[in-house]
Image (tube, rainbow, N blue to C red; front, top):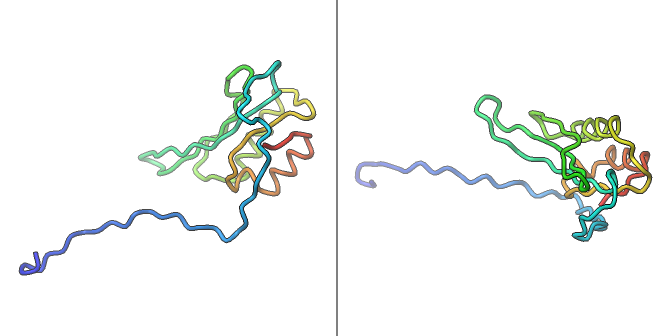
Length: 129
């Protein structure tokens, strides 16, 4: 290769940037106890990245009720934003009565720990796990 002046093509691995922000911690209120006595007692939410040919990466954000094990609200978007999370929570609030003290279990990504989401949860008396 050296004699023919050939070189291989090297594709660098994607390495996410590390944030300088402090890591936010939340108490794990579920503590692996997913049993419930009624609906709207415990919800879990997550954002899934889906690769598509036409639009590149898309994001599905959903809420599952642990009592029924059904998806009760979701949003699908080209961007992973706080607005998608708030929109999903508002859809769930329209269709379900949210009792005070209900638990919403999330991971600690920036969309779920954003100030707007924390305010929404506090206004609706939902405990964030």
